[in-house]
Image (cartoon, rainbow, N blue to C red):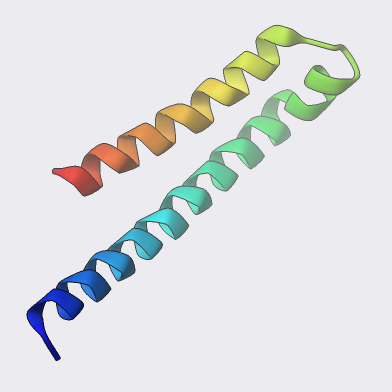
Length: 72
């Protein structure tokens, strides 16, 4: 196998692995927030923009942190 193909497959594997890891972390954090603060009820029943922004910031923050880990 040529070095370029091997490098590509290694990069693809790392990308898929870290994507799955970050999605699992986001799901775990979101479930924790849901159980403790009833986040989905706050967002949809109460129409709470602040709760939606909080949830979005957690998701983006986790994805950003995982991206920085992968890059460095």
